[in-house]
Image: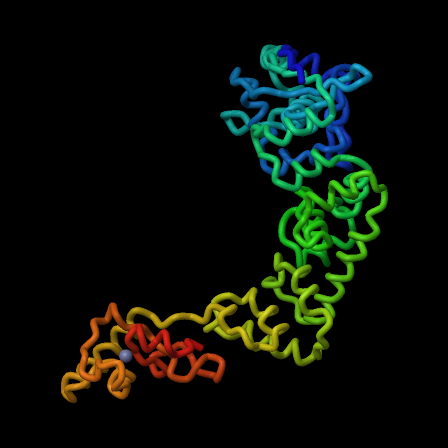
Length: 387
Ligand SMILES: [Zn+2]
């Protein structure tokens, strides 16, 4: 791959700038020679983070904006590899799409700036590397660069590397915040639609975690039927099995849960009752694990991270047990007293060598509270199930 360093003024770059507000995309610049948002680039997201104004302030102060990379296409035109958001910010500003706030708190559109401020922006030099190479060279390189501003996340890089008909079709469905299903999907999937969170999840589920392989295999497909059907199946299964909607459902690996449990029959009314009861249980510290716990027949209590006894309660109970043990001349671990084989029947343990134990396990209705606490030596606590 060859690269050459060029300088452009902002005036040159924004010539013929076009912005598509509906798609949130900067489209063209350099009098039509430059494609600002090629297929593999993400949507314009600077505006949401307030970084577009920061970009303009930098120009006005003469700060460098960082390197920009263009790729030379076969027909001799250019497309932005890295710098799309900076260029779109500048283009939007000089075409009057937003205002910046100056030191006195005044809103200033480009047209409201003084002539010398306008000139400062328009004559700012942008440093651009122009890359010339094969598609795979460019993409390999693209995968390794660290983008100034907001780094590309994993899925955005994969979309670049495996760009083609499949990614295009997939993004139309899964990366489109206008899609009416997004609200429903967001009950189960965490993250921003625009930043490919739903697409990444759909790929993860259908590929059982092998996203790269799946994208590589289907790269030239123009149909996403399999992925879409799988995603819909998982979501439908989750929403039918767990009729009670709660924020703790978001971001679970529903694809994995579906694969493991979809052959088991569940009674939705019963499941809803159990979900409600477990969500209200303050001794459970990992409420997001309730779903897997229920699917597995409520056997694996360790999923739920049952709350531990407080240091205060442990100290209180330790003192009581130790005082009583001293009077009786026995160990302060009640199990040591009766475990003659262990030969600690009159041993007084230090508090740091003892642990809190639920007398009645959580699974049998025992609570994490002083009245249900016994201090046991570590040996005997480990021998007893904690739940
Ligand atoms: Zn003991």
